[in-house]
Each structure stands twice: as structure tokens, then as C-alpha cells.
Image (cartoon, rainbow, N blue to C red):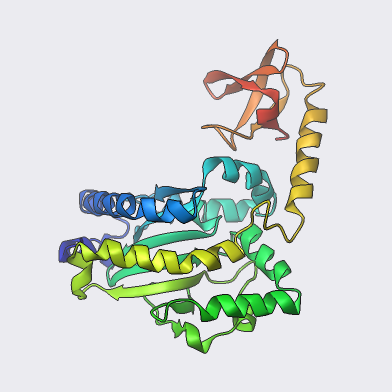
Length: 306
């Protein structure tokens, strides 16, 4: 569980200071344990997700202010790589710089801790446009809007709906909303959408082993809504599969003529997203690429246009 000191680590005067990194590291360790305890139940129904954690240090990934920390579950690396270039092309350079957080680019299940307590549930940020546009397109028919309404009605009554940038802002009971309100909330500059529970720091459950069971029950109740919204090849309502196919064919055409000195972008692996320069063609289908001071060998299909 979490102690009063864990919540106090997010007092406003501490947000931008590295002097409190140790306090926040303690929180991160607790979040890691909590995430690992919830992970088996989550992966049992959503096996393609993986766990991640936000930074405990002020950095570019949190606008140099640690207002809160999260443990989250989002699509795994293979699935992220598949749609990564599409997401990059749909975002401006300013968006990449101002908000490079990974979990803002994909629908996710998460637990967030801040000064006021815990927020746990499903998050959908405006940067996760592949997901929110998918549900908007899906609900272009009356039939699917009825299905979304059915999903909302079956959510646990403890779940609230909120579209708000501020932490711990009050939400609406899910019994008070319908699909029209949810769908209107999606746009390129909208505040994050949240379905979940807000647990005050004074609630005894935050320091209890019962917290794991409560969160696992919550995530199980959100499973169907997550599946309804999230883009997958078997839940593709805005033809992303066609774009991915064309993208792959374009990359293959491009690398028939790749030569030393060409600038390329890494599409897979630990260096995904980085720009490099072709050093030499090592053998058929394998290219040596310089990334700063290091040179690595990559398959041609792991490289794309800069």
C-alpha cells in the first residue's frame, strides 16, 4: 500500500526539484509492486499489453515537473512499432517536444498517484488518435452507437467518467452519460478522457493489501470498453491496415536502391524513431547504420524514410 509520505511527495513545491527524487523513487517501487500484482489478471484477458512506469525525475517526458506518477498497461512493443510511424506523421514537431510521454500515445489502463490520492482506470489522451478515431469511425453507425451505450451501461457503478486535465477533478457517474457525450469529447486538442475510480488518500484501502483486489476488479470491469475502443487489426474502423500495407511496400521499394550516405529512420528495436546514416551494405538485406557515435547492423525492413 501507500503511506501519507508517498502522497506528500507530489506537493507542488516538489514538482520541479531533483531533491525529492528519492521520495518519488520509493513511490515508483511501490507502483512497480502494485503493477506486478495486478498484471496477471490484466494479461489474462488482454494478453497483448505490457507494463510501464512514468519517470520519477523531472525530465522532458513530464515537462520537467513530476505532478504524479503512474504504472500503466498499453499495447506491447511489437504493436506500438506497427503503428508508430503513423502516429508520428499525425503529430506535429511541437506535439512531440511538448508531450513525448509514451502512455499518452496509446489507450491504456493505469493507476496514477498524486497528492490527493489514487486514480485508476482507462485513459485515452488526444495524442492516442489511432484509438479515439477508431471508436469515432466505429460509431458512425446507429448500430455501433447502441453497442457503445450498452458497454457504458455495463460498467461497474463505482466507475466515473471525466474529461479534465486537472488531477482528481470530480467525474460524472457512468449512469449520467451516453455515447453521444463520450464521442463529442474526442478531438486533436481535447483533454484526456478517463473512466475509472478516484480513491482519496484517506481511504484505508490505499494502505491495505485489499487494494490489489479492488484494482483488479476495476480493470476487469473495463476490459470490454477497452476492447471496443482500441485499434487492432481485428478492430480496424479507419483502414489503418491499408496504410500499414502501403507503408511496408513503400519501405521495400525505397531500400532496393539504398546506398551509403543515405539518411534513414529506424522503425524497430531499441533505437526506434532515431535518424541515422547508412555506412555500408553489409550483405543482402542487412544495412550498417551510424547512429551518432555507434554503428549497428539492421535489416532493411527495420529502416524507413527519414
